[in-house]
Length: 198
Image 1: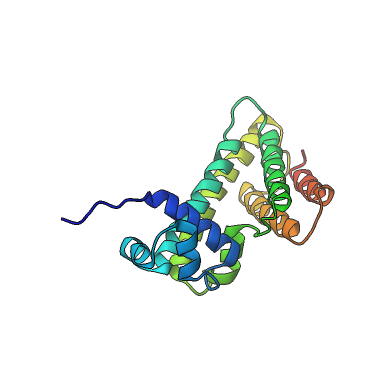
Image 2: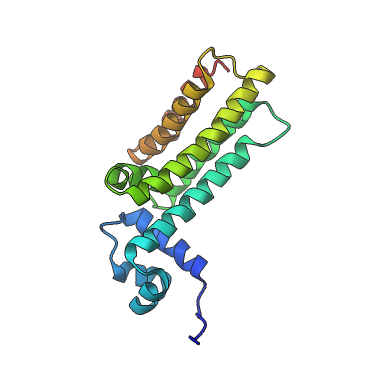
């Protein structure tokens, strides 16, 4: 019988997530992961098998955390659907501004990974596609609800609007990392809300 592990795997995955997020998959070394997690090389490989397996766990942790927050915001009861979408933009913009204030200019891990790896790595693409569908489901639902409560009046199909908002959210994150200030990001979000005829 092997000795029980003396560390929290969840915390190790979270720590690895921050390193992969900041440096990207290719530029992250085993030494970087050891420093971030506090684990030795053998513990990392015995537990997570490979850098790639740890990366997939870290990416899954990130997308689950971020998308759970989006789904929760969009599912809030007691306010019109359009107001929930506006609140989502506000939270995203504030998050980007906070990252900038703290010197964490790494951008969105999902966007970074999509552009760097998704086209060439089926396992990464599977994680990202599953997450994308979850985000689209939440956006379709809130847009359709907005049509019923009168807060979304665009004649465009729900599917197209859901994709539009998804692209716009990614665009807000990229613009923030490119140096756009709070006013510019607010204007991008306002344009997105205008597209919903809110």
